[in-house]
Length: 289
Image 1 (spheres, rainbow, N blue to C red):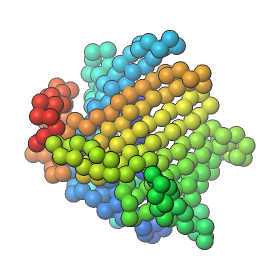
Image 2: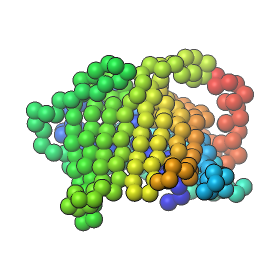
Image 3: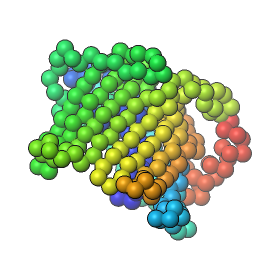
């Protein structure tokens, strides 16, 4: 998978906890609390990611631009179904990938039977501190054991404060827990931050995600806005190697979005040129309708 497409996948999950639990197991998180589930089928968003790869001296050696359109297809009792269309520009050439269909649970996870919740106990009540404010949360712990690795996730969520999943800590180890392959920490760091969208100031949510493995550390700072389908308004990403050098960085920005189905869905994303026209149009009107 090209790295630019991988970053889009990360963006789809940035406000989510990587858990695989059904509504019967997790009654607190409903469709209305999901960044796509609160919208009607047909809602869509278009984002642009610009990714730079750097050499050992910090010089940019390549730049890729990716436009991704995500459309809400359907909502059922346990998940939302999304269609993801991607168009990449590499070295001046455009490549449009085949549309992907993704089924995402209300915790934000890609539906998978491998991750299973531990049995609930009295310690499943917890607390998250955001800007000095203590927020009571439910805590869910999940595990997945495979032949080569074991995944352990701790998820802090509340139905009372957006984006509802306030913290998530994931650890990937060897099958015997003796070697840590990677760790990922996601946390909300600020609430009700002023963010402009279409000429109005909204209360945005700032989140930070840090992924560490044996080769590098990747940090993402994202802005979440519940009024936007999918939640993510923008993000900034950088990856540094073990010597502290930036090897990759990217920015994501919202180009356009809609909460109702488009009259001509296929035509809107038929070419890179169409996406560029949308970006220029929203730029000319200063983000206003």
